[in-house]
Image 1 (tube, rainbow, N blue to C red):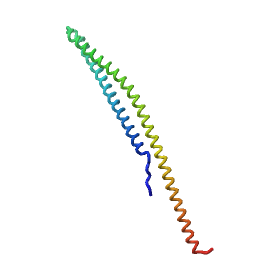
Image 2 (cartoon, rainbow, N blue to C red):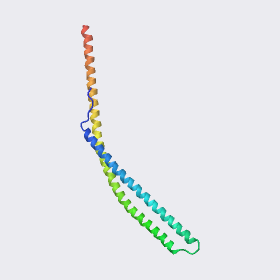
Image 3 (cartoon, rainbow, N blue to C red):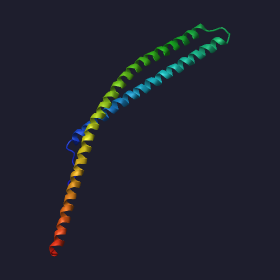
Length: 154
């Protein structure tokens, strides 16, 4: 019995590779997004730590070293700028990620269309095979009936 061979298998393989490539792009952008979010959280934690240290120094009531206060304020300001820069980068990554996801959805739709075509052709092939087998069984039944009735004259 001949096996089913999908004539558009190379096209399907190419569409699967294309979809996998798009998935890799989305994964890289997701990794970049996570790294930026982590960097923003780290900046926020460091700014909070600087504020707590400054508050503790001011709350002691003793003489305050203004140079240390100025350094702490500068560090907090530096973390704030770094966090703002990361937020802007994150906005860009979100935009790229949205576009990459749309491209991935389109690639998946193209792949699914070819798979649907393959499934339909496979069903037609199986239907044809079943029909052929059914016709062969009918023919064998008719031949058997003739042999049995040829021996018996009616």
